[in-house]
Length: 138
Image (cartoon, rainbow, N blue to C red):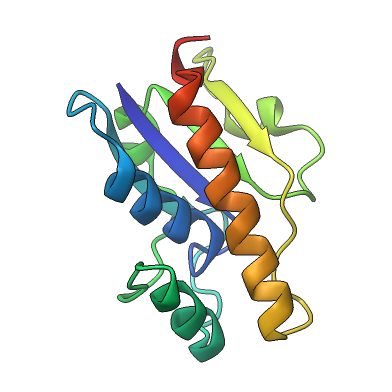
């Protein structure tokens, strides 16, 4: 099973979800990658990097955008954004229907440590439930 975590720019939410998932996942048949809907975007935020590090996750590297190759690779999309209203139409193309789970988690618009920590805790909770309940099978 190939799981693709997606957020707006792949600089924070989807990247953290992928890294945290890989840290706690025991099922080696589950492979993950992450990407952003929009290419480019902002560089990694120092506060987000610092806060993630306190939780044992090292955010680094350049954000990646969704590619056709990634969409062909995945079996499941986990969309981590609250502002995409119709994800089925966004990711279903050429008659190919993707399985999509949406976690409605907002981005870090305030830039405060408390907001970053809240977002990361929401992602941790969602990933833990995702693994515990084997939601990729549903």
